[in-house]
Length: 454
Image 1 (cartoon, helix red, strand yellow):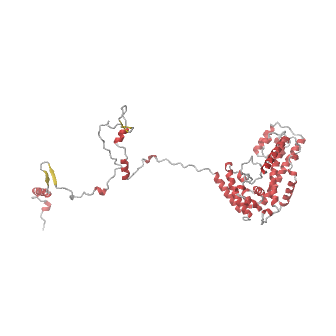
Image 2 (cartoon, one colour):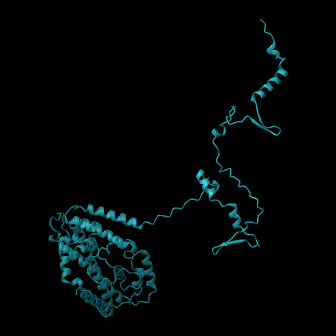
Image 3 (cartoon, one colour):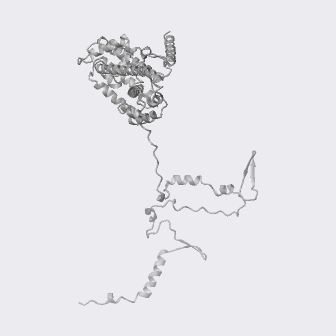
């Protein structure tokens, strides 16, 4: 039932907007389409704010915030700012329709409703825009464009009655803006006492809207973060993203890139829940806890916006480095020799050009023999690679090189005449001694044989 009622309210509001578009030009008095400024609610809120705004309230709230006398006024005034914004848009539409006769291009050059209203108020019914000073209202670049366009416009001068209608509408729009500023100043001055930590995160305006919609600080602190970010007025969500509310419209979320707003809203909602519970217990009344949470939020949002780390580029090897020495042990060398391609397999893998190869088959399988059986039959010995050849240690090279005869040596000699002959080693030494005695037996060295003097 509630959803049907909300849909009916949305339909009636759309119909009212269509009727306003049709009947706006025929209306001569802006008060017939914009009635908020003269309502009793508006007058009472502004009167109470005027009485309380000069009161310097430094006393902290000790009990429940809902029992504070100014709390209801703050919530009511904060909700009134939304109505004022809608009313300013209606008055802006009224001014555009009636001032299009004088300067139809102005509404496309100045898009902001209040800036447009101030520009219309300053220009009035003047046809020569060089005599109008717009520098205090619009940026210098926009002033130049407006001045040039105004000199070539096809607009006509307004009558006195039309000029009065437009002037009254401009005064009402500026008066609504002034009332809104008063309300916001009052709300900001009081929210630092009611919810200082929550205001430090999302601002006093958004904090007041969230408190008003949730039903007070007690109800807000009981909400989980997934429901805090959905607090809104309950109007149709056809033109807004799903699961969004006042928090999504805050300045903190809107300045975040669009693709990160949903994630940023979840982060801020979790921190707002903690801040609301801290405010409910009247701890950290100076807002220091809320400011620390705001710093954490800013750091997380900055981290989300950082670009991904660049891919590490692996440097190329040095060109003059040469081939790497891939050494292995005896076991690896033997394994390579065992799995090496044999000469027979190499011959099978080769084929002669233009010559049919021999084949062998068994059990329905046929294998080609390649060049097996077509070579000369000689086998080439494999050449050992000296680079991988295992060298014997030096202590093994000199082992057994002494002058002593090994016990394994035999004294047998094989001669073609006598066959096996036993050799006497002493006989050879005797022959050498006899030869030496024959040649050198009677001689002596001169210096050695010279007698010594006594």
